[in-house]
Length: 319
Ligand code: GLU
Image (cartoon, rainbow, N blue to C red; front, top):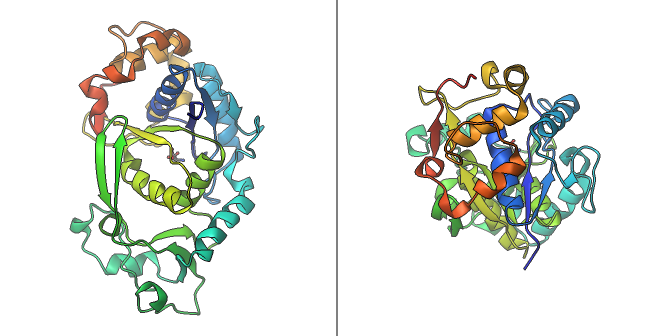
C-alpha cells in the first residue's frame, strides 16, 4: 500500500474564492484523517492568465486558513519537485515522448472554431468533442493536417469505456470517444495541456487521492486512461459539489464577495472554516473551528446528501 498523499493543485489566475477553500479543506481533511500527507502544486500552465503573485497569495491564504502543506509549494519543499508546473517542461516532454513512441500521438492544426463547426452543442453539453479531422491513416483517420499552421499534439483515443469508483459520486462509466475524442497533450502555442501535466505530476509526486470540484469528474476518465497507457497507478478520485449562488450559478473568481480578500476582512480563520464546515454538512453548528479540530468530525463514509450532489447552493455567506 502506498502512503496516503492528497493534494491541492490551484491555478494561480486570481485570488481563491470560497469554492477553492472548500476543495482545499476537503482534500486536506481527507488526507489528514487517514494519517496521510498533503501536497501543494501550482498549476500555472496557462502563460497568459497565471501569475506568481497569485501563487504566493494562495499560499498566504492557505496558511491563514490553517491548511498547511507537507510537500510542494513555490519553495518546492520535498523530493518530487519542482512543484510549479511551468518549471516541469522536461518532465512533460519525456511523458509525451513515451506516448509518441507508442504511436499514439499526432499533430493537429484544427482551431477551436474548426472543431465547434463540426458538432451540435446540444449533443455535448458544451464540451468539445474532437472529430478526428487530423488523425493520420496509421491511426485509422484521413490525416488532413494543414502544414501552414502551428500544430497541437493530440492523443489518439480509441472507442474505450473507463470505469472507476469515485469516492464521492460513486461508480462512473465514461466512454472516451463519445465524451472527448482525441484530446490535446500540447497546445499549438507550445503550452502543455492540463491532462498530460496533471497525470505526470500526480504519478511522479506519489499522489494517492485527488479530491477536487465536480467540474473535473469527466476529466478523471481521461486521466485514468493516460495512467493506464503509461503503466502507472492512478490515484483514487473524489469529486465534491460545485458551490453555486442561489440562482444556481457557479461561483467564480469574479464573485468578489466570496473571494478571500473580502472574506478575510469579515472572518477570523476559525470563523470562516466553521461557517463552511457547517454549510457542507460536517458540523451541526457554524461555530468557529480550526481545520485540525474538524478532523474528529470528518468521516468520509458519513457525508451528508448535500455533499454528494453535483452542486451546492449557498445562501449569502456573511457573518
Ligand atoms: N488546476 C485546476 C484548477 O485550479 C485543478 C486541477 C485538479 O485538481 O486536477 O481548477
